[in-house]
Amino acid sequence: MIWYTVLILATGAERIAELVVSTRNARWSFARGGVEYGRAHFPPMVALHTGLLLACLAEVWLLDRPFLPWLGWPMLVLVLASQALRWWCIGTLGPRWNTRVIVVPGLPLVRRGPYRWLSHPNYVAVVVEGFALPLVHTAWITALAFTALNAVLLLGFRIPCENRALAGVAAASAPA
Image (cartoon, rainbow, N blue to C red; front, side, top):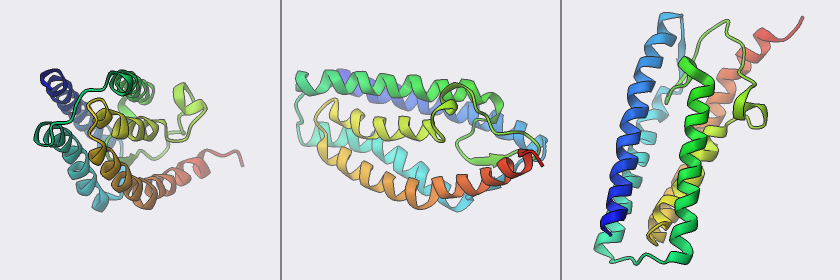
């Protein structure tokens, strides 16, 4: 359980690094006339992602969840792969990457890196991490709860909001 706790704390530290990058990038976007969309769904997303980390620890420690190598090792590989995908997205978008939905008018859609194949590759990383991180140490209740709540937020609010925001970018950059 100690190593799992270290993994969760490292994931929390990585989240803080993301927020530092996101804050810097938000300033960059707003300085260039960026417009934010979907501000109302952002606090529930922060709460859900914070809750994921806390629930992972609580379920493992309070319910004495075991580490099952046949499950834990493959899930750890998925967690690491999701982190790699997330940072590939961050690197590809550069200063345009953000934890919020901020669109800078006049900038074209990014169609390189993982965005060549997927519209929302960062959300693939979020979904994979959301079930894999708890299952590293058999926290199946957390995996199920986060996956369900995350699906509601992503499919019901975040992705439609982002698609609406980016639709204006795509329309503005389309040939006449």
